[in-house]
Length: 320
Image (cartoon, rainbow, N blue to C red):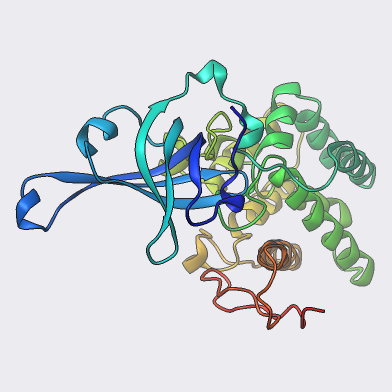
């Protein structure tokens, strides 16, 4: 069966394809003739996007066949109700061993080998001996390196794809490198370490085996910032005579990189390096958001659809 991608579906299309279920809800009918019955509302996804779906009949039975995060083989027809909506006539879960992950997870647009080459170069720029040893401890750990290079940087906001964490961290490091070149008060080695480590807790915050990057229990209860601080402390304990003050500075970089307590930082940036790191992190995230909105294209008048995360529509210029 050929894969039908959500971005290609049009009203009236007959659908028989596989999608991952990202939401499911049973809703009671409000019509008197169907009192006591429920229909199934879902959101389905693949690497190209998402679509709302509804099954009017046998809602509880169909809902009982799958869990959120399962890949489903879906039959139905595309209708239109406040946008495209797939009216489902049948579905069944796809056995895990038959799932083709490349249909459901986007990957970083940059070539993996290019990113790994850039990472290796950045590591050579970290010359302070204790920090170089710390980075060696992390990146020569094969399991850490595998997770770091495969994890997303987020589920939905920015760099939300396989390899997103690595791509985002490299962007932050590149900005930090430029900052250190312009402001000699900044310690380049310290700042580059902060760039590479600031989001490393996300390798445990997200379940990389999940097609939709569901959060782990540890991620929900602790969060990537505190997880990252714990990972730092664990590595530092393995390095003889690691300076306590340097560990404190690194800890502050991780704990303050969101910039504001309302944005999830346990502390606000209170050092020059932390302040620089926060802004590099923010610029990378925001530009990626903007690029993803722009990448969806515009209407004939040159404007994209309104994006709720950016809180604006984007002008791409008049179509030729």
